[in-house]
Image (cartoon, rainbow, N blue to C red; front, side):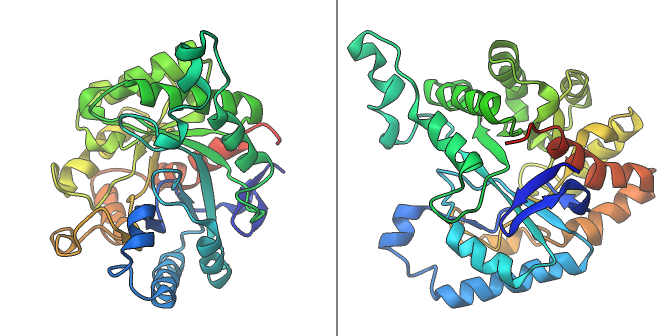
Length: 330
């Protein structure tokens, strides 16, 4: 039976069960948190709060979350291990990669390709070895192995830094077989840029790629184009109703199911126990943005509007399992 690595060790892909493919435990700005930890507060309280929230999620029947928190999002695996050990009924799958909409982090500016122009020769990117090491050997001595790769492209498009990370992700994918998830900005049709660089030029099979945040768009024809190209569409921001509505997010899933693409969608909320990107005073204006929203409100709406139980199982169980089962052994 194919296996996938979780925070608590490898499991058979058949044990993934109902899976939310894009959730975070914590999203943090590491430098700020290290130097100005006042808002974070007490570590034990934060851990206890996360345990409580994740236990409630597991009580709904969710068996796995995929946490694509990487460089740029404040990944810290020892804390996640502490939480996972207290919620053994929930699998947590973690990622490796780098999250940027523009330039690479300063650490990489004058390493590898950052020196190529000055030296007049092409140099390998150290990101590739970092990503491969996280997948093959484990993350920072914890023994926890990443099971997927993460990169991003947003409204700024294919900047130099975004392209560098994306190509490093592609190289790590080719070495390990680990699947890929990409933060995208569908209003700018950045999925087509992902296709050009990651797939057409770097050779990554689009069937191994989740285009995150596809559900931000209501352009069914554009999303159909991406699905027909083979991509998995991340309908993964349920509850984030700032520039859209609950109904718009749900209705595009209904429409794509009607068009026959349930087998190329995954559902999530992109929620977190704590995210320091947002003023806490803003969160009350997003009352549906939490781990329990899909089960409590989204699935009843989908059923009412014609999405079948078989299609729901496909999106929540079958597609995530297939995504990880297609990975090469590593």
